[in-house]
Picture (cartoon, rainbow, N blue to C red):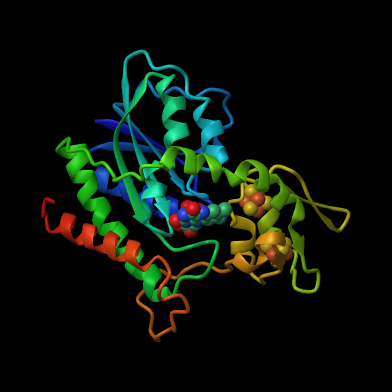
Length: 291
Ligand SMILES: Cc1cc2nc3c(=O)[nH]c(=O)nc-3n(C[C@H](O)[C@H](O)[C@H](O)COP(=O)(O)O)c2cc1C
Ligand code: SF4
Ligand code: SF4
């Protein structure tokens, strides 16, 4: 079998998940090609040579990022029906998030592609608030174990997986398409504190949409932002101010290692029920307990 996974990852969590899928697939002698949407310069994408196609992305306000939808439109119509699977990554396990691919699904349907299986992995927040290293590490470990199971179940044993949906998902996620309006606005309102900035150009060089320009010793921001948080999250000196989302800014990579010290969880109650549900479902699935 030969599969392809096309993905976007703002700050690396989706990329970690996708790479784990690829390494697990290769353990089962399944060829898995990975493609970053932002690096595809061709006008069209041909997936006819693959048996299955995966699309992976971080959930942004209950939706798939705009860059994913735009890139998916490049896929040319498949000659025969092509199964695809979805890998969603986000900071909270809410049923509303499980419908984040609705628009993507309708784009792919026109390309003769049908949804076969869907997965949602919890990984730490890159916006809203910083998860503790302990929580981040638990999420990372669970994602790794689940991917081992999912790859074996789906790619080897053809067992598909589906997620529970919120009954009002369609109108609700439509109402939350914040990236359409606030993405460009957010990108334009980004500011850099000159006293803190060490001019490493990490933000300029890594922005997936070239939204940040450095010219005549000045940073310029355009209207292209996809709200991925990569620039402010990875800035080594935390020099970014992110306008109306400043209070939600998260800066600095997670270590994804067992923390040496106990860190106080400032948000112990946040989405508690959905976290409990995620770990319970994960435990049951890993222990092979059917509902
Ligand atoms: C603009 C924005 C909106 C987000 N909205 C949601 C959301 O609605 N639900 C959620 O669980 N996580 C949300 N997140 C968090 C990301 O989905 C989460 O941190 C994910 O792990 C990031 O993956 P990445 O590193 O591949 O970009 C949001 C992040 C950003 C930047
Ligand atoms: S990443 Fe931070 S320190 Fe580096 S150029 Fe950008 S704002 Fe300055
Ligand atoms: S400006 Fe920052 S948040 Fe916007 S697309 Fe570029 S890296 Fe992502």
